[in-house]
Structures are given as structure tokens and as C-alpha cells.
Image (cartoon, rainbow, N blue to C red):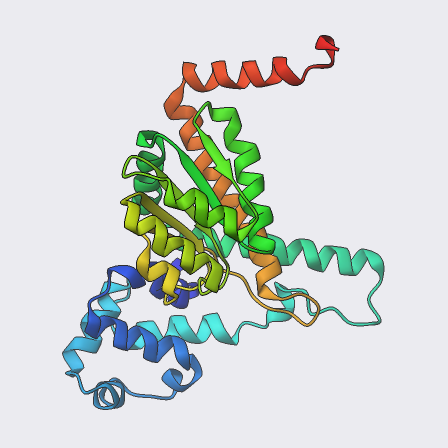
Length: 283
């Protein structure tokens, strides 16, 4: 019955692996899910210029028995009142109520992101990072803060890591990378001009690229070697870009823990050295 709750999440998580025809069907559903609820499989096929069987196979591809089962799941997903799981803050709410709604919204963001987290992509990202001579974290604006947090965290692994918040320094650093390095791009929209400029330079060096972004169809997700996706909803008092930071941090935490477990003694030794270096006993 879990499939009856996560139709859109299932589509988003599989989007990069879809064929061009499957992407047409996916776009059709994602752009107007309410329309799909009142549309037959024949109408969808006719609108897209594909066979009914192609739409049916797409439904099977994303985990459903057929088109009708997919519609039932979609209805359950988009008709569920958002007020139960997202902020929906009102002026009459108390501080306690507002705080509870914010926490529930953050929890929902993390849960939704976990649903679309692709295990194979995570494994590939971990392997690339472990094999790299240097890891560069790149972000702009709010995502730049997340990139610097990732840098702060991954110093503990003993791997060579770096992060710069200035766009010019990001470009300069990118130009010095090699095919033995990797860059992790963090961007909610996946279409920030500064980030895409850095990506272009990085690709010219042959370095591996990993993206943490919210949109499966963004320029960033389409161009990096490994895309990792977050899911967040916009509310009256907080943009989805803000709530996505919770999910971005969670993905980075997951990468960190996986890498520390893989590095075993090396990781623990690096962590101990760091703790000793900042210990007040050295003062």
C-alpha cells in the first residue's frame, strides 16, 4: 500500500533513467497531476502521440499495476490536506503551535527526500568521493552556506576537501582540477548562473561531478555525473529553497557517515587528530 502514497516522488526519483518517451509521460503527469485524475489512458496517449501500451508500461515502470492503480495513488497523494503535514501557519497560532508546524514540515521534507533517494546514485557518489584526490564543495547564496557546512564536516574524514563562497575563487579553483578530483554542486534550483559556469569549467578538466538539487529537470541535474535529489514544499512563510536546506544537509550527512564507515581506521584516525587539535587541553 506504500505505493498509493508516493506516485510523484516515484516519478521524480526515476526521472534521470527514463527514455525520452518516458520523460514525456513523466512531464505530462508532473506538470498537471490534477488533470491526469480526470483523464483516461487513451486521452493521455493521444495527447502525447504515443500508444496506450506505452503509457501502461510507464505505470508499471514506476511501480504500479496499471494506469488506474497509478491514478488512485496520485489522487491519494495530491488530495491529502497539506495542513496536516506542512506549516499552514495562521496569525492566530501560538508560538508553540507555530514551532510544532515548522518541525513537522522539516520532518516531512526529510521523509519525502528519503523516498526519492536513489541507493545506486548514493553508492556511486560515495565511490567517486573515496577515489578522488580532492573534493570541492560548491554552492551559491544559501546553498553556499550548506557547501561550507559540508566542508566543515568532511574535514573529519581525512580526505582533501575545500569550499569557497566567492564565485571568482570557485572558478579559479575549478580551473586547477584534474580528472582525479570531484566536485559536489549544491543548488536548490539547479539553474543558478554562477553554479553552471563553474560546472562548465569543471567538466573541461575531466573532474567527476555530483549534484544535490531539488528539480529533476534542471540544467544541473542533467549535466552532472551523479544527481542526488531533495524534495521540499513552499509555504506562505517559507520558500521551498529554505526548507530544502534541511534535506541537503541530510544527504550530506548520509554521504559523510557512509564514507567514514568505508575509511574505518583512516577515518577514525583523522577524527581523533582533529579532536586533539581543537581540544582546550592544548591551550
